[in-house]
Length: 260
Image 1 (cartoon, rainbow, N blue to C red):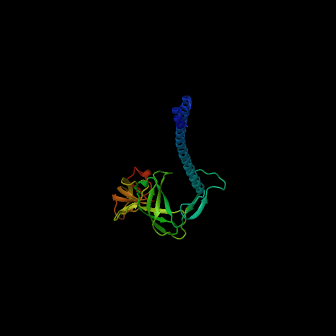
Image 2 (image 1 turned 120 degrees about the vertical axis):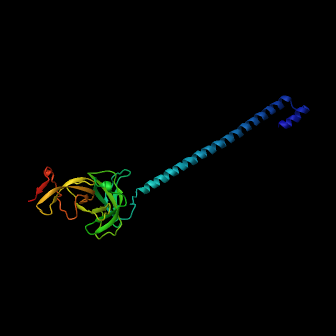
């Protein structure tokens, strides 16, 4: 219309004021179109941002769903090993907390031994020492696998890995005895462990006279390494000598005693 009126106003057909109104209307419409185009572009950016936020929310909800699915699956508790169910520590319907002991499963074919060693002797034990475990039905070979760092009731717990074949009747929680081989000494002079004898010390023992077995003379005896029941003699005694191992502290002021 503005282009048509431009020719008409030149020819004097229409007044100039009419053409000016048309031009003004044209300029206003151009400005309105520009504003709408800008609004449309901004709206497109807004839609993209909303879509990105919705996708992030969807991904978050999907992760939550996967977590809930895993938690629901974890409610089906399964033991980490195949074995025999020994004990169930909970009741049906009971609420439990994370890490709570629910049940105990054991493998009868894969056992270990736990020995209680007096704290005074635990210092000589190290990982890898040979152990003989008495199950009352047979002797099983093993090695020291772990030593508890704490002392409980005067003893140290030593875990033994069983390397030999298990005898018939071996089962979890069976009471056993064990002998840990700390060292193997050859050609050693030894006696039963005296009541007051300590390793690497010198003590006085009454040694029976060879010519009169009813009398015993006080003798200084040097002791070496010891086990539970015997102790090494490094000096003061010879093979075949007989000594009194019981407590003779009541006779400390005497050098000779007579036996009745």
